[in-house]
Length: 136
Image (cartoon, rainbow, N blue to C red; front, top):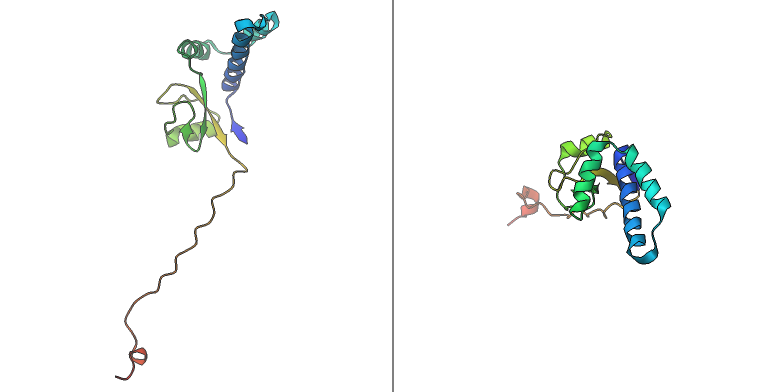
């Protein structure tokens, strides 16, 4: 799978994974100071504008990042505009117009192509020539 991911989006994905691990360990498996340190280090690398949006989405119980496959946002399952797809392919960070998540493009490279549709052969019905009309 080939992915086109903006650097900030990859950092947000990593932060989401660390936060998810932190809440799992916080819910009964014992806290880990090392995980919190790595989370704080990563948060320091992410620009404030993206971090504020990430925190808002997380408070709402959502992920702040969503992949785009076949022109559809995986967060809200809405179609993404052609302009946004071109920007993602160019490495420009874009958000979903519908759900507001930061987007990254996921293209299937080895995806099997659909089976070719056989052309339906139809007979043309037209004027019969004088030779085929027969001698009546």
